[in-house]
Image (cartoon, rainbow, N blue to C red; front, side):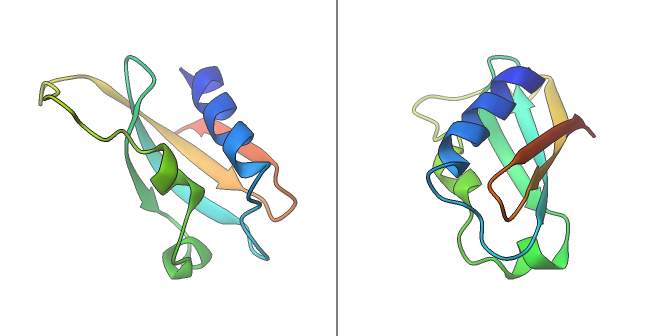
Length: 88
């Protein structure tokens, strides 16, 4: 899951670098690799009006099981466009 998440974010961020400050998020991922939620974890991320993660967020067509297991990751978007993904 970590590799798939990293690829999703890395491909998107390369086209839209996050800006001047490092952005840190807690990202929840479903078993199928879908990003089902994220939360800003530093002041720069809180202050950011737009984040590339919003574009990657799963938009439900049907319903997901509320009991579906999720994995949380720490995602760091660096100003130079690099992405770090580590288990939360």
